[in-house]
Length: 101
Image (cartoon, rainbow, N blue to C red; front, top):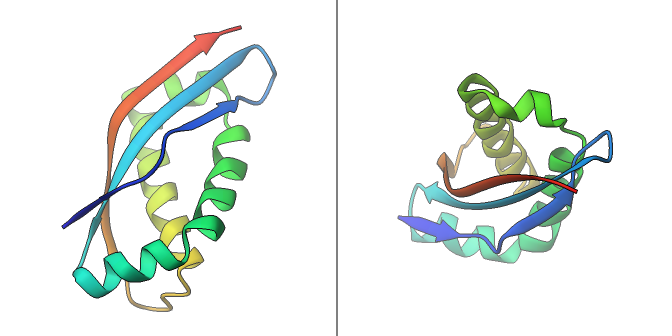
């Protein structure tokens, strides 16, 4: 089961680039999806902080994107106060654009 998040647009650290990203979270079940909706403001805030701390160099490589997916998954689960459970099983990028300003 998937839940699409609204797009994120942030300035990357260093100030010369902007990131536009769209993603979907793969969730364990319907209860996890409903729980995620309830925590969306907290999730979006945490993800904006994470994304805006990244640099263009960190996100250019496939390895950098894979690390970011893991960080996003962790932050979403933590924001949902999931404890040991992981309601978000995976994060999928549906759009990933780095633009020079």
